[in-house]
Length: 597
Image (cartoon, rainbow, N blue to C red; front, side):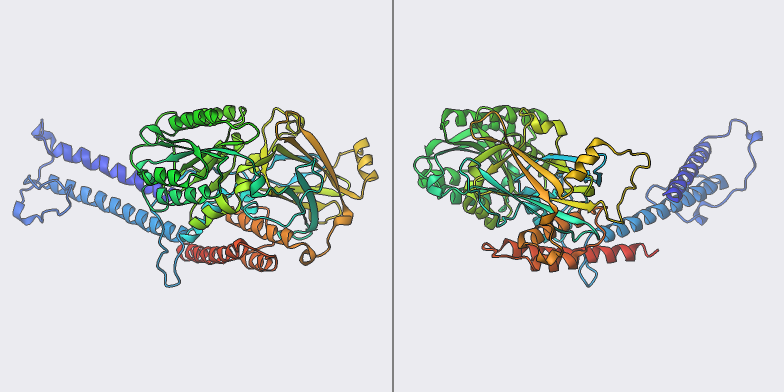
């Protein structure tokens, strides 16, 4: 880069000098006696310049010839720099674009304006200094679907753009359901060797919500807020959205209410509270929709909430479902204002879920934040198969919330654990004091939902800790208490609000060394599969804390933990892993070829 800048500076200097000399040659000397004498030369002997910006030869003195020679040298220097830029650009593209085995690049979509937030990955925490970890649960799955689509297009996701908790929680796990009707979910933990680093342990926290049959789901008041702007015209957007909503409508009943609001350059009501089983009316309304105009989403949101309030069902599900391919470019474009608006409306009992479609101008970050602050969920629909998963197979999970503001806090015992690392949940972290503060918002759990969180631990007797112990740290009363319960690895606490409740309830679970599984292959399928998924996300994010894992190891780990896999999602994941492995190898080889030293 330094050599390149020096070359640019030299070229600019040559340009200035040549400009001065050419400018001087274009005027008659003020004092002929002060100018050097030159011989005349025949213009026809001078070869005309072929450079498009070259000055014409119009003088019979050698001065213009000298100027042209300087200009030619300067142009050559500039051309040399341009050639170097093109060469560097080609090397860079070769390094970042996956290739076929024959050396040709894989096809990819043109450069787009998709917006994915960059995460700051969780680091290793020292238990003696920070023994408590607190976060909100997350049940979104949109990041998994966008990651899958990117890889299927022949590209790997950008570094630090993968939200690992959404990858893990895309899958259901065979956790035991709650047995106490007073508690809406059950909590289990498991402890086994970690596949990511030697001499570390993997702690799995699993939450399972109670199941609700379709005929016991209760009435739903659903307002579909649909983006029909011009960018929604492609087959993977509005046409797919129509099919998805038709599939959903077939799961509804007469007690449900369905409204449709559309927005583009302006907003309007297409359906106003028809019965959920009125498939004919819903189908007719959807068939009339065409993609055109801008994207005034904020105006549409306000109209959708008005309809949701108009048809509000007490003791039922009241939800706005926003479906869009991109950003709001008209109206209320202040995204924080939009987030604050939906957060305020959620306090009236109306939630917001978001469904993303397509890529190109897609705002993943905004759709995730809107659903997070409005007691909803965020999913990305890239295929009809995914639409069925979200809107048919998991409809109760999508619509019926069974617990609000679910927070997790875990205190590690410094007598047993020296270091820990929370895998994922970077944008769900909470302050320690937020755990007991019922005014602080957190995530929701749907009926039948499973939620998983993973911690990687290092025991105090490990010989390869990342952080040296403090030299002057004195023994304290806390240390003595930690030793007194030395069979405890950690103490897990959860808080949640029951539906309609304002005060949170507390659940506690000690995690002991008796739970320790000595060999990873003896751990449950669920722990091993979740570990493979989380490992994949860490590789995609180029995580600095993973040293003993690669694609081949993760593929073998996932294949050993398929379980029943009733819908085939785990098998699909293994194929995705294998494709990413090939793309990663192609990129590595391309980088080595472009930069052999």
